[in-house]
Image 1 (tube, rainbow, N blue to C red):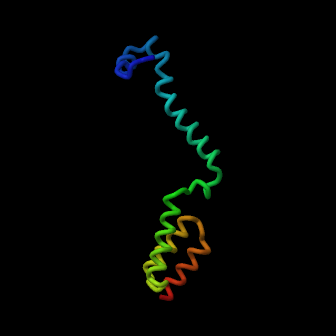
Image 2: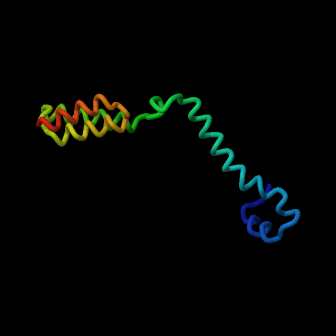
Image 3: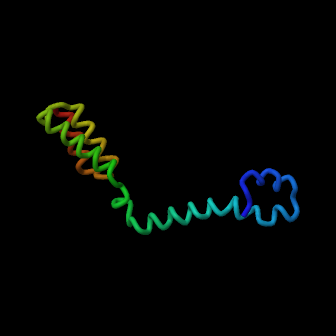
Length: 102
């Protein structure tokens, strides 16, 4: 196995030194692509891959709307934006309509 300090030397030396150099360049790239594909296959659809940050954003936006008594148009617009980002368009449109009425 080559030491990382030898990469520039082998690149300029050429010949036999470059015969195994490609694995050090392509290995991490191919590994990252394979890991990303495996992750997506295990997580399922995009809906399941949304994860915690989107759920937290929805919970915080909903709590802000509740604390404002469903009257603050800025809070309702924020809730609409979170729903739109989550591709929950019907809920986003309903929240936007409520925001325009307040």
